[in-house]
Image 1 (cartoon, rainbow, N blue to C red):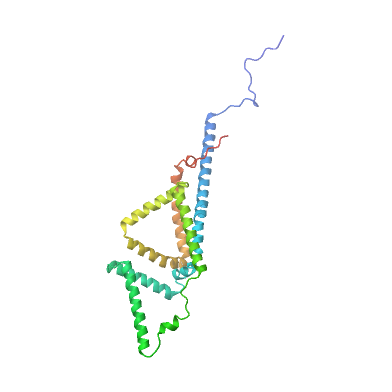
Image 2: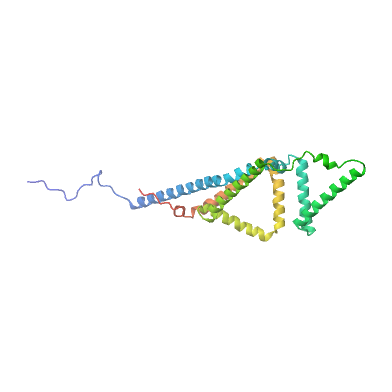
Length: 260
């Protein structure tokens, strides 16, 4: 006679495993959160690399310009006489435009006319005392012509800057880089608000003051300014991280979640 089989079979530990649905859902959520974190990290790294590579041609074109080094010397006040003279003329122009109700064209015309009168009076004064024209000898050996190489160098720098700006504009307005497009939209909105608060002359004068004051101040107070900037950037990154956590970055970037 054959042995009777037991009514209740003992579970085989190797083949039969109990699956807990709660643990499975928790593992899936962990996988999804890991995928979203990876997508956010890749998006941040990609945006940083894209931003650096995007503006690199423009910065390179500006640095290649022949007037770049001389402009830096003026802005950093390495030549105090030249920097002070340009800064004083700029402030005087702003005073006349704001309170004298002059236009830029009128001021430039009056400045050239005053320079012409000074040169004419000085030359006539020297010749009246029996001397020769003082400008004849000084300007005798000066060549006012522009060489082809100098003109080509200027044109190439301007063309490189134009191409870099065109590439940036295409990425912004074609919406190929959503992060860059969002930053541009925020910048345009801030500019519109500032434009409603101040006039064009005030904004132009503010830029003039920043260009002449900020480089020298930053050079002397670099450590303090960098420390304050790091604190501000830490706060901004914290708030930005809170906002990014609420955004479905995997859907925005068009990435599919990993399936195991």
